[in-house]
Amino acid sequence: MARKYSRSASKDVEREMHRFKRGKARSGKGGRGGKVKSRKQAIAIGLSQARKKGKKVPRKTSRKKK
Image 1 (cartoon, helix red, strand yellow):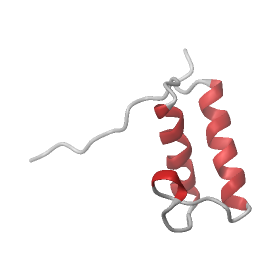
Image 2 (cartoon, rainbow, N blue to C red; image 1 turned 90 degrees about the horizontal axis):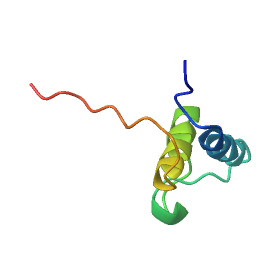
Image 3 (cartoon, rainbow, N blue to C red; image 1 turned 180 degrees about the vertical axis):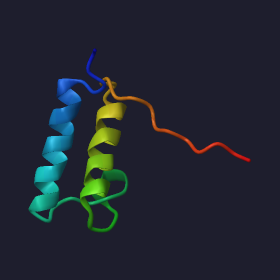
């Protein structure tokens, strides 16, 4: 089975987790938002950055409307 995420996308997430662990990760455009407080948030930011760079990352799941 093929990889869902590219290796370079994994590197982006790894980089963001490193920033989170050091207390340097910020949310929002250009890092102007508040401090990232959870691992899940840091992973989401890393995946978002990878998506913007055009790397192989599955699209975000959206909730179905009733």
